[in-house]
Image 1: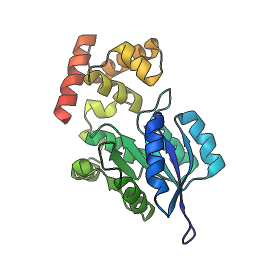
Image 2: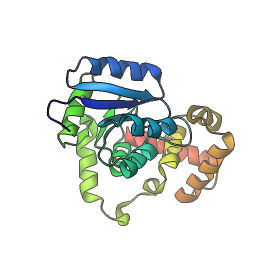
Image 3: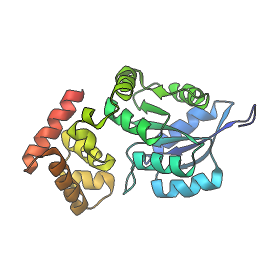
Length: 220
């Protein structure tokens, strides 16, 4: 990146108000410009290729088959030089861990002060790792010490989509609600639920929901 050149930012979030809010924040920064925005992960890849941003801000929970973590992986594989900051409504360390392992250079919850976005972008562009204060110690400790499969819990074995559904179950969402929220079919959610039960050694649906609720509470 050339000296004094503006940081070209792209925003990916399925909530238009969030995109507009971040855009207004960054418009005030003389060293940044928003070059593209979208709420769809599939459109994002084409927009990245077209606008060549330096930096991407991506929501972890996107509608459709491709979620935020999948998108981060795709960006790392196809556009390795682009830095990514993941936004999330969840403040659990395991989400941050998955985002960083996928290739993101930062994880910020939507509860943070809006002014932190610009400072996070600058820090990441300098080569720093940005993590929301409340989880920074936990995630760094886990990333440093959980280096082998022996340290993994059954929940760690879930795919990113399975984990997302497990989290939503734990927060009280039913199968139909999850399907609508993720823009997937009920049959697809049921298929994921079955795989989650198999991985966690659970036989019945109510037991899965109970396990998910207990897990969410344990992370609070």
